[in-house]
Length: 211
Figure 1: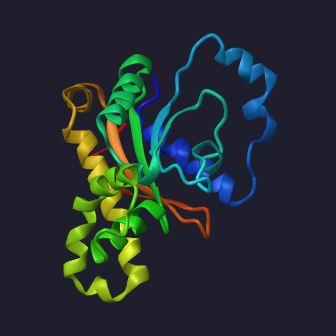
Figure 2 (figure 1 turned 180 degrees about the horizontal axis):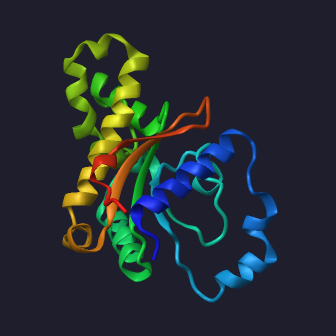
């Protein structure tokens, strides 16, 4: 079992390789790695990320087959099935780090802000179900000066949405709460910058169990 802090350091190091264009390459997806994975899995981190095609977690963190348990949904929202997926991985595989990974200029966050500014603009009931999960984390921002700065508004809304998802995972599951309290599980929030490729871990680092 890999401790949460060590798992975080692996992700940070992998992202540094990705940004520097020094990725591990074929070794991470080799025939040998695939064969090894058929015997079982032991991912060292769980990533709840956005479905955006520009943010594939394995590439962003330069990891290979079997390294990450990745859950992707528009807006990196938290719903019961997604909590269940995190519970499953943390319980079954002993994974001790969960990362909620948002990204700059998130379309789901932008759609939510658009809906708040122009109610009824979101036509699809299915899309609105995503918007409604993002809404509580961002609607308060429209009462601040950010309302008049669209780019800054979206930037802060992305982070607020990540923080909300982190909190929902921390306090929305008896299983995860028990793992946090007794077995060293850590849940942190991060943002991927589409322009630079850098992942900024900005939420929950102070709660990481230390070595």
